Image (cartoon, rainbow, N blue to C red; front, side, top):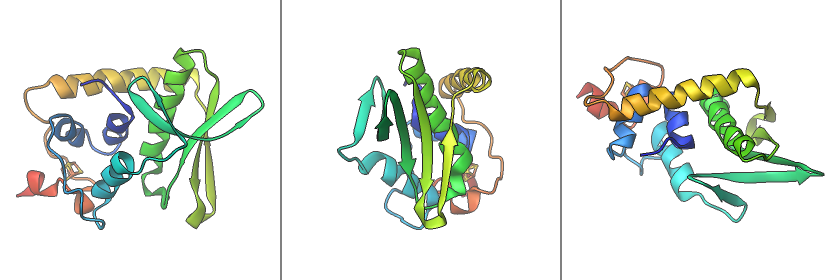
Length: 163
Ligand code: SF4
């Protein structure tokens, strides 16, 4: 399994989720009250005409001004802002490697919030490290140990971790 934006997102939430997801152990996708289930639903089933597929990643184009492409997402809540930011940075890195200059934007209309995301040399290095660690997690014979975190309470994988 190749690294993709979804795994980058999971990595920034919980490393154990990276293992479970990449080994085909799907969380409850129907429970709209469960955050991770909602993420899966949004990312796997919410596809629209603005979507661009590029290699093994897909993302939405927000708009294009002059010669700069702006990609991003519109989301309900900024609860997963950090993970969403890294996911978007990963897409920007892929475009950058193909010689395409782009910026990212995360929009939270219900919170009247807009976060701009820009690729820097420093976060390219961080993303490369994340990719290496994700590969190590995927190839490991066992999942990382359960580490209780703020996301456990509403995680659709909690039965795997706490049953
Ligand atoms: S329940 Fe907690 S430890 Fe288990 S996968 Fe979810 S976030 Fe990770």
